[in-house]
Image (cartoon, rainbow, N blue to C red; front, side, top):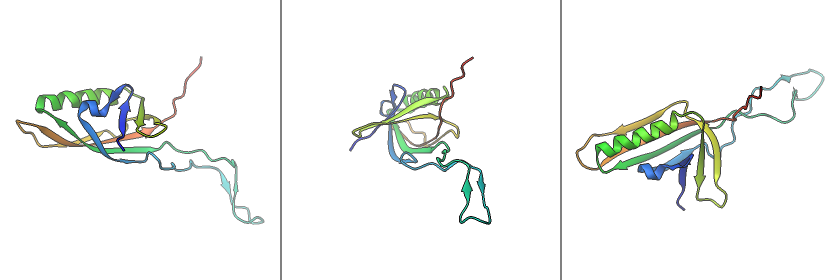
Length: 139
């Protein structure tokens, strides 16, 4: 199965990026803090809300980037940086019957580990994302 990772309309594969490992896409996020009361006359604890609310999921994408030369590598990194610093993005993971779609922001940056060479450039890349729910303010 081949998965395609897309930010907005830009696929990571078009930038020479291949994702080898993804963390957090299918995890259940942590439950947000809720008011819980431990009453001595009842078993267990009492909770204010019976339907929990969840934190945003943390998504980490590990992979590698390949380019024909250092200039192409830098151009692709600049394009990726532009995508991830533009604010809230849509991340789509396709290749399943139903694609996975997340609203994310790059809060913890991108790590690129590379060795400069005159020929084909390859670098390891880690992208850290936080799932968010956009709040639309109506005035």
